[in-house]
Length: 232
Image 1 (cartoon, rainbow, N blue to C red):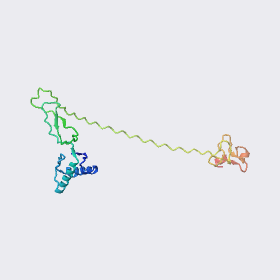
Image 2 (image 1 turned 90 degrees about the vertical axis):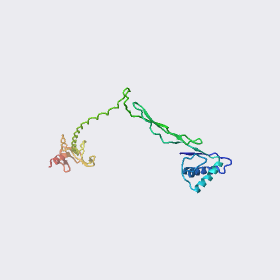
Image 3 (image 1 turned 45 degrees about the vertical axis):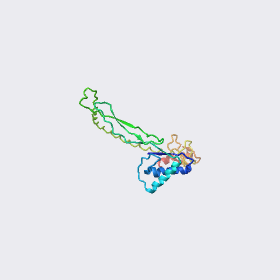
Image 4 (image 1 turned 180 degrees about the horizontal axis):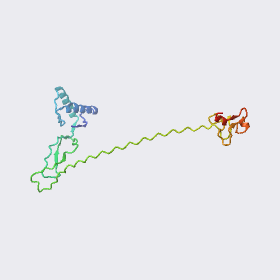
């Protein structure tokens, strides 16, 4: 139950507005909620207050009366009644049960929710139902036959690892036929002459040219890469 308090400050009220609000809160919490038999409110709670709490509540109530205090009580639902009986030989009939909202006082709010409930009846057959339209209850569906388990898929064969690529053979000569330390390769090492050159330019001269003459191959500082390639 919800007790809503309506405050109307009277000229003869001994309490100021803030103190009046606190007094009303105390009256509801310490008196009404503990079963105090109020002469101002319809109180459905039952309880036993001691002599001192009862005197405090009576004193508080007396002050509230002088302040024209009124107590608004919201409605409370009763318990639902039993379900009504289902008729025989009836198809699509319903049972009903209901409840009542009581306790509204001094402009209190009505109960929230429905005051009645319905549910569908089971079909009840009797001896004199031959001439009635009878819908037989549906037979339970036959269980489905268990499906055969599917054959597991064959695992895929693992792919063969790719063979590692052979490292490219490093080229130790230049396309411009220059050679020696003054004409290095891209990695900084001195360039050589191609020992398999189709024109026979396999010797590096002192002038840093690849060729095949005696000036390229027969001098003291000449380098014959054709012979070096043959292991001579």
